[in-house]
Amino acid sequence: MKKILILIVVIALFLHFNPQPEVNKFIEQQKTSFLDTMAEFSGTKVRMKSSTILTNMEDQLTSFSSEELHKLKEITLTRASVRGYFNSSCQPGQSDPTFHSINHRKVCQQISNFLSSTR
Image (cartoon, rainbow, N blue to C red; front, top):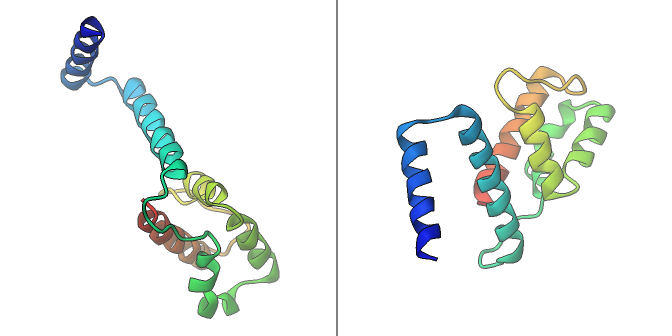
């Protein structure tokens, strides 16, 4: 056990002083995955349903087309689908051809608010 702890400390020090972009990306992915898994099992705080995105955007939905509304309903089915859409389409420089650019920004803003409140 002592040797494992020493190995972990040595690896952490090495990565701290010699950052490796691929390793850092992998570590961030694993960390996010681990935190998501733990959040699913530890229900110590009240978590919002993904459908709250639709209710929060209720007054803004008049500018959405029927196709955009259908896509938004698909996105908000589960927390995992919301997070997946955010990671794939709401990063800087990314877009979704289904949504008009203004509506896409509205959706991404609401998803960003949702994800920040569930952590």
